[in-house]
Length: 300
Image (cartoon, rainbow, N blue to C red):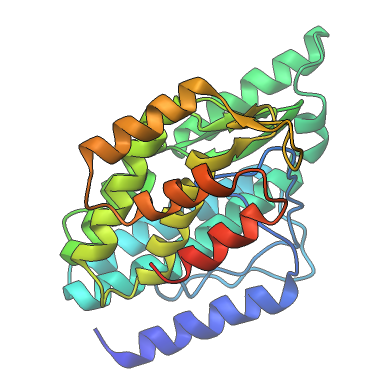
């Protein structure tokens, strides 16, 4: 694998990024109520080798964008056949960014349909069904994230199926965990869809991954996901909050959550997260409790 490939790859991604200042779709955990706006059509042609360059002046339709998803994936698979594990890691990093951006373009192309997704008229539902069939052909699917918002995402095993046999152990475990977690929806309508016990177990999964690979290039991503789960475990979301009457003398932690915190600390007595639980239990009436937890997280 020649260094020139990565130069081209980097330039292609930077070029796309400079054309776009909006967020893109992907399998990362979504905050309820967030809505991504797809940027202009991408040029991912150098992602997996020389292919026809997409004209910036030509607005691609959904079918053309999906064709790029398929062709890019095919070329990445071909590159992986002759790549070292380090090179495969770099291909994953670049491909993840480029493909998420491309999926964002598809969302932009179908934004009007996604906004009308739940309309019951026959024409809309026919179009929804037709697009759904087309998305599945490329291992994409609808993502109904609540509050009437529908996006488009890669299926949970999209990247796992491509990279599992080529990347290094830290990348392999990271991708496998994401694949498993993305099998089920995490939140919707400002509510957690998983029990606090299951979220606590996810905290431990990412805690162990962070400890196992302290020098991994994925460390920042692992840490970010780890801390995100910690916060949701401690505080919940607006409609599934652990604390009632927050920032008030009448505030209290739900009995079920106290029971869960005790279960967690008993099962994992050496977990660094226990420090956060104890701070919460002692200071939950403090209006600065989230800042206290955040400061402590930075020390873990």
